[in-house]
Image 1 (cartoon, helix red, strand yellow):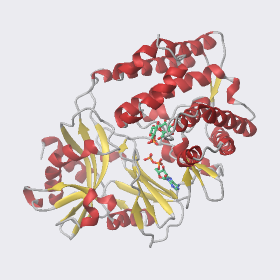
Image 2 (tube, rainbow, N blue to C red):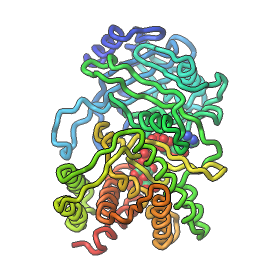
Image 3 (cartoon, rainbow, N blue to C red):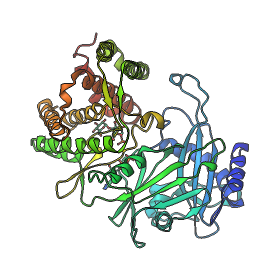
Image 4 (cartoon, protein in one colour):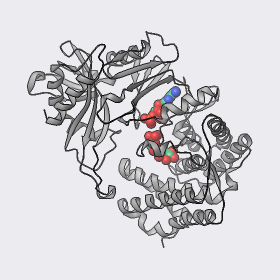
Amino acid sequence: MSEAMSQAVTRSVTTSPVTSGSVTTSGHGLLASLDPLLREWLPRQRWFAGKGRPVTGFSLVAATELLPVEGKLGLYHLLVRAHQPLAAVQGHVPHPGDCYQLLIGVREALPPRLAPALIGHVHEGPFAGRTVYEALYDPRPAEVILEALRSQARIGGLRFERRGEIRPDLVPRMVTAEQSNSSVIYGDTFILKLLRRVLPGVNPDLELPLALAREGCPRVPPPTAWMTAEATIEAGTDEPYVLGVLQPFVQGASDGWELALRELAKGEDFSAEARALGRATAEVHTALARALPTVTLGHLQLQSLVDGMTERLEAAAQAVPALQPYAPALRSAFEALADLAGEGETWTAQRIHGDLHLGQCLRSPAGEWSLIDFEGEPAKPLAERRMAQPVERDVAGMLRSFDYAAHSAGGPPAPEWAEACRAAYCTGYAEVSGRDPRTDPVLLRAYETDKAIYEVLYEARHRPDWLPVPLSAVRRLAGSAPV
Ligand SMILES: Nc1ncnc2c1ncn2[C@@H]1O[C@H](COP(=O)(O)OP(=O)(O)O)[C@@H](O)[C@H]1O
Ligand SMILES: O=P(O)(O)O[C@H]1O[C@H](CO)[C@@H](O[C@H]2O[C@H](CO)[C@@H](O)[C@H](O)[C@H]2O)[C@H](O)[C@H]1O
């Protein structure tokens, strides 16, 4: 085991008030064995945020034994930092490495049904001959987590809190769809999202649904229980880490993305649903504005917003050369916003969703829309994600999403379909909020441009085949021809 790992284990043992479960000597062995396996396995996970930079090692933030490793099935909760040489765009600022949450199962042999969960076979040390795997695929470990939430357990530095009732006999199944985090559904009653890249501090994925629940907003499933790591789990940290949130599962729901593609494939109009989505978004925004402070953005704040957009454009153009010919024209969308701010225009800002798109909207069989996933853009620091922002940012995210759908349905692009949805969405939004987002075209265009640039980078990193979709929006927003 590396020195960093061994220090971390000791720290976790000595500082955590252990009620049951702890880091044992066998835990030391497991961690040493995992290092080479994780280097190989972690970068291949969809939720691994450091793609494109090799992992050179790990340091352990905390290890908590949830099921004794000496038994037939051992279970460890780990928080590990992945060390990665910094990319030039990050400016060589020293960085301790992203912290990931892992749930590791240990068995003598993996049953065939768990083959996709394999992390690797241990060859040396006290775990030689054992197999380690991603334990969320396995019902028993998923039950252990639910039981901890149900009983409001404290295990090592882990805290499990609950607000609502949880039945003990719910059967778990892991969500296998592509995700930024990992989710488990329990008996079609609850869904638990385990955050993967975790950070100390208030996480909007818990903060905002709790605030909306307090306001009685029915558009967002209210958190039933959650899981945190206490601040003392890591030296130098003074805030807990939010690790997971359990919320009611919307049974039989379809997400807005699936529905939109289905309607497109049939050549059907989607504007009635788009309008309902506009209404739902405005309901959530109105409730958030009641629940949490709003601010007025003056010249200085607007200028820093524009600076942020411009910096993101420069960074994205460095990383994705296809963006470069359009950069001057895209920059002009941001400059137009700076000009308005210079003329003394102000905007109201409030807490918003922060990463709104069709995939974050669920429609129940009764036709009711819910919004989910208030984590914001996962790559951004928590403080930035929690800043008050103009609602147009969320609106622009949805407008981009209709455009995405119109370019992704398999057939030729359907710009008229997207245009009808975009207009209907703004109409629905105005019906509830009293303000049509289209009355602020400069702000909306700046946000749409910022989002399209984010998407270019996102697709280049995660789904290169999709890159043409945001690039076509970039061409449109830049006025079609490269300059
Ligand atoms: N309350 C819910 N009811 C039903 N399905 C949900 C619920 N919350 C999330 N899901 C499903 O789980 C998926 C992932 O959830 P999400 O919060 O978006 O996670 P991530 O941050 O990993 O993308 C969603 O796309 C949706 O299909
Ligand atoms: O849902 P996440 O929080 O993981 O969001 C990330 O992944 C999304 C894709 O899964 C990505 O969304 C982009 O693709 C969608 C279609 O798959 C489209 O509806 C969105 O408009 C588009 O932005 C999102 O940007 C990213 O943060």
